[in-house]
Image (cartoon, rainbow, N blue to C red):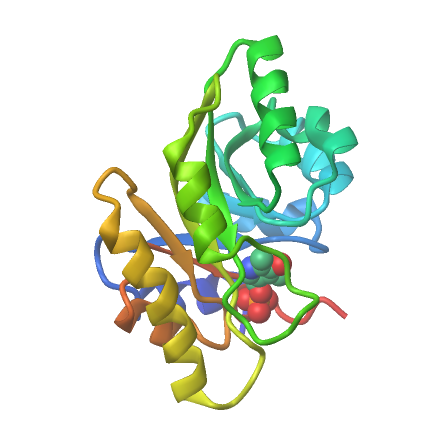
Length: 209
Ligand SMILES: *Cc1c(COP(=O)(O)O)cnc(C)c1O
């Protein structure tokens, strides 16, 4: 199937009101342009260099999400074009984003990445840390929601348990509007758990390897 056929098939399974962020990392600009031509506007990338390379030449009405681990010294490559930085996983990064957003004169929308998986290598804040950060404020930064990645497993109950954890915290904060959970393999569960945005890469663009 083509990228557009994959996309249409997935779109037909996503309820109205749930945003589909097409994760185009490692795929060429042409793949993004294919979806752009059929009207899709929200794309996600995970590497600063690649993000910059694509965002700086593709149409300016694309809504770019940055979803990968971001080092503070790469913030300059991301802030100018990011509609939302989903993967904020340290206070140091939050401060660097705040500073850079002020320097370029924008308010940067961000999500706090919460650690919900069993795998230790996955990034993110604990529930307690999320609460602390939400109690503070950072100039030129608007915290609009939470992002999480479930454990990579076939155990649907485990995945649902992890998504429920972040969904419950999200629901407690009435001022948050974005709950970004769910990828190609588990977005159906994420939607059942209350996702407002899903991040789907390989099921649209094919394998990255
Ligand atoms: C790559 C990536 C995705 C998309 O993964 P697929 O399994 O290809 O859909 C979603 N979220 C994050 C944070 C990613 O790094």
